[in-house]
Length: 95
Image (tube, rainbow, N blue to C red; front, side, top):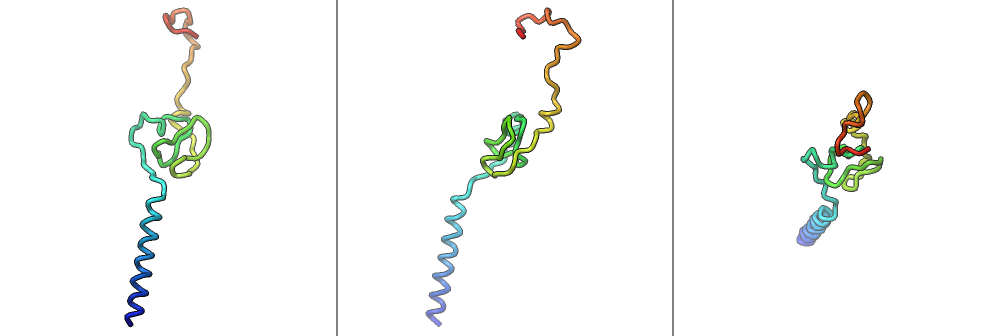
């Protein structure tokens, strides 16, 4: 009976030790809350809005490895358009 208890105790300690050390090596995924950061303003963004994510090209998030998605708010923002007005009236605005 004493042998079974020692075996159970050693197995439990080994199990807990593996679990705690495995948690420390996993990447830290932190969600960005600043909506002016590149996680929100890039053309392609991480669905989880991880810190350090976002790109002008398709790819994957370095933190959570999810595929970037097209940032609909960035795609819907029209570019600066010069049609319909005189280009000569831009003082200090070179094109």
